[in-house]
Image (cartoon, rainbow, N blue to C red; front, top):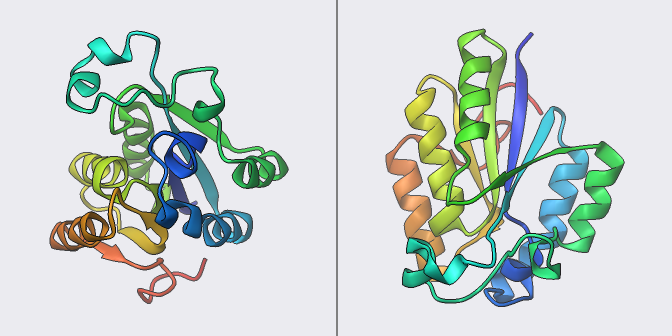
Length: 186
């Protein structure tokens, strides 16, 4: 049986109100939590995960702002999303880089078995981890219809958010939800 998936990317304290937080990230949290709560299908989450040596990694050298260190408050999901997740008993994929290879591999394998109707992406940051996860899955399972919900995403800046949405659309990852695009209702 085919199922719809919602992938919620990195909605963690450090990206919302912490070291890399933005007003735009804070603004999407209520809509994103409502989307997760009401989604008819499987919801999976990613969690950016770094360690004490973050500043010595390539990412840390290029973005020298410590964030999402495992076990810290900044690494935790935002409280509003955590509450929704506990009610739904959702799976979290910890990842040490922009995209989760484990998540994409699992969905690609399910797609080969005909078990995936479509995948929607939401979360943070549109121009880094959301786009990376979406493009990785598009590369691994090109026949799956993919969507990104602009109202449930925020970029590092509003301009980069819009630029990422344009790139996603160019790569046939459509804006909006599966339902809005005229596919099977969710």
